Length: 506
Ligand code: MET
Image: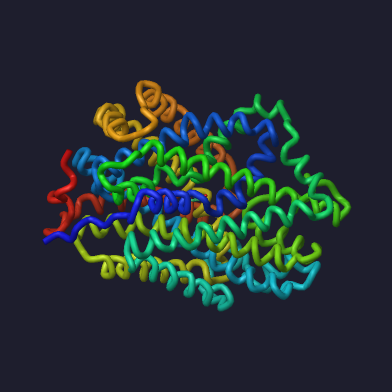
């Protein structure tokens, strides 16, 4: 007897979990700088275009696939057409790569929450502390891929994995749903306090000026448009299996598009709030250092682990800012990480027909071990940086491109998906949606893929040795596709969900 498919407790829990997935590191540390660099206030135009013409349509696309075909990514694509199963596994494998490094950043942030309380890094020493004392960073060009264990990273990383394994083992309703019900309100409150506190820092106004001042000329630059479109996929968690999986746990009679709009606008709202908080704080940092905002603006690891600790050291009440900021990264990160893991767990559960706990452990323990082996060592940052850049540029973008082309042009499923979306939804989709998915999305994704390819071929990524980029960049993204085909070739377990879900039948 195949176990019954799990489900979210209610539509609201689903919405909160989908927001939990979307709101992650991308919103907090990536968006503010992408917007600032892409024209400040003027960036709103490419951003809204990307959201309305690609982000939201693809979110509906994922929902429609997961909900109509009621399965994890491989099962949903397989039900659409047997030959499409590899697309699902490709998405699963992208999630494998993201999961192993996403967990590491959460572990760093957890340690920094603690460090912030007592300014462990020693004011003025933020940069050296991060790279030398904390990560013990070594240069891959000199030492290769190191196996030297760094305990202050390894130990919190084990804790992060234990926490997420616990959540995953409890299942969709009692684990994922409940974790989001607790963490998301907490995250919102913490973040709101953080933003308000940042607004009261001296220099905040200059930071906001820099963030919002429109540079209209940026709109003439295709790279700015590309960065808006590139950002929106990762930010909304679309096109790599997450929303397919989550929507497969929704009851049959659900307003899908209405839910999607709530999720998308909540994600954007959070992003813009993050921009305000981050730039208010950067305005303070610029003033404290007697420079302008352009001199301190940055994103990603540099923003979180160098700039913010500096702000924490210098601001009155800095420790509170630090605890709120890093705590927010941890909570936002965990709710995203569990959504990534669910893509993998659900796929295996469907394929093998195994129970929740057995599947969770089978998936998570090897991932935790890989994550430890690669990222608790002195060369963690180079591996992380390269894997992240390549899986975004050639994993997410490529699978999204192939998926829209296959579904729209080869399988001709857009009419089925449109009907499905319109059955219960409050916001009807029609011809425009089909054009956005079938025509605009492939054009935009194709453009992003080709420009990414040219950029990464023309100079060695990140200045790393070419053997290193060949393995952790190119090799990794190619391996994903090959393994996806191999996994599709494996037979479905006797108790798998491939055939007999009573609810998959409309
Ligand atoms: N949407 C998430 C973020 O913005 C990323 C996808 S889930 C890892 O960080």
